[in-house]
Image 1 (cartoon, rainbow, N blue to C red):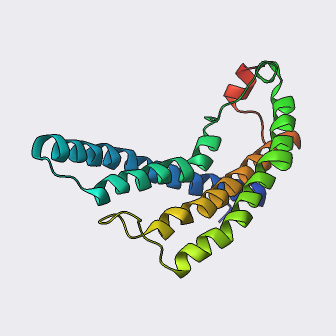
Image 2 (image 1 turned 30 degrees about the horizontal axis):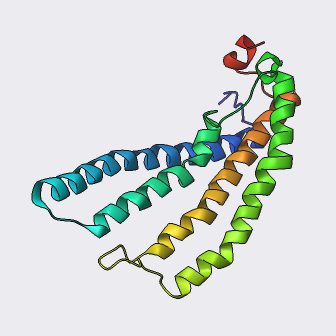
Length: 186
């Protein structure tokens, strides 16, 4: 058996794994937007059409909204969807962009995500300890789950920041070539 096996270097495999996790979370959580629209329509129909209110259903929309924004932050980073003031950046070469993005991850993004996770930890633990529920009668009795989204956001954003850092380092070391999009912007 004389087949040639080309193995992917471990940094690329790690990058693919982290990107895959982020992509799975982002695509999965995106379905909550559909459920949110349906739930909101039901709330409006019940309230306007039948004069019936459901605090739990209204709060569930808030929970889903928070989940979409917090848990999709890493996916948004992966897709380049975060706000960027790129007056100079858009004219940079792929290597220069990789430097800027790497430094941004190391100096700003990772420290902020880690800080957010660290600072929110006790806040979330105390909520879990008392199984904090809604302050409204008939509301969702799981505020502790809502608060748990904060450190989860920090974790998912950190994982994708590491993936972005690794992607940029592989480009800077010449292990991977720039993507066609990066080359087109030069």
